[in-house]
Image 1 (tube, rainbow, N blue to C red):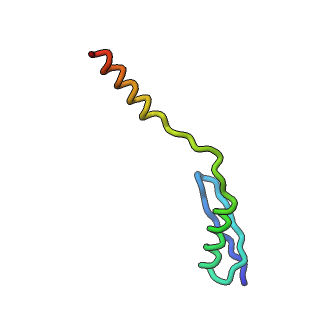
Image 2: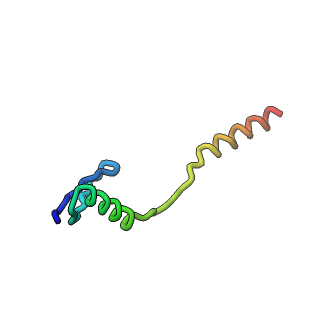
Image 3: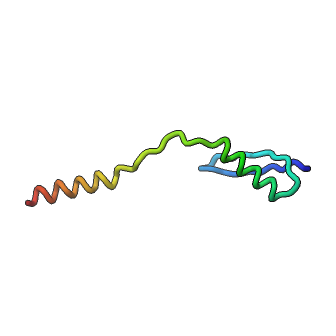
Length: 65
């Protein structure tokens, strides 16, 4: 087994994952496992821009009636 260092970048932030693997493919698979296991969602927000636009157009339409 050899040590493989995998570098990745997310939004300008560089990360390095160290794995002990037999092949590059195995190192990649291990890195994906590490990413899945150690990544969590902090928040999920809905973009309300479309709703604001929709309600604005509804107000204009109601005003014209």
